[in-house]
Image 1: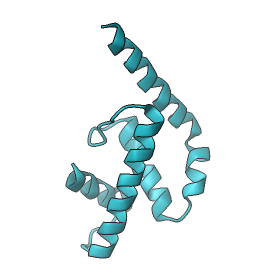
Image 2: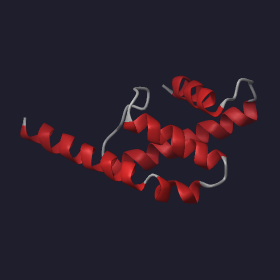
Image 3: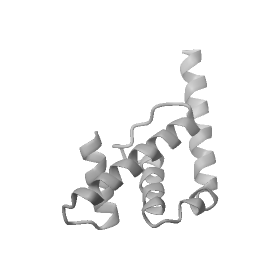
Length: 97
C-alpha cells in the first residue's frame, strides 16, 4: 500500500522525478496523514480507493508539503465532518448487523 500511495501522491503533486529525500519526506507526510484521518474517523480507512478518504489524504499531504498544514482543517472542515459522520454511521450500522 505504501508504494501505491506514494505513487498516487507524487502524481497528484506533479512529481515525475525520483529523489530519495523527497520520497522519504512524502512517506512521512502520508503516514502522518493516515494516522490523523484514522484517528478522526475512528476506523482504518482504505486510501487506495477513490473517495473522500483519498481526497482528504491527497490534499492534507499537499498542504503539509507546501508548509501550510495549519490551514488544512479550516479549509476542509465540512469534508472532514462529513468523513467523520459517515464513519460513525458505518460503525453503527455494522454493530447492528
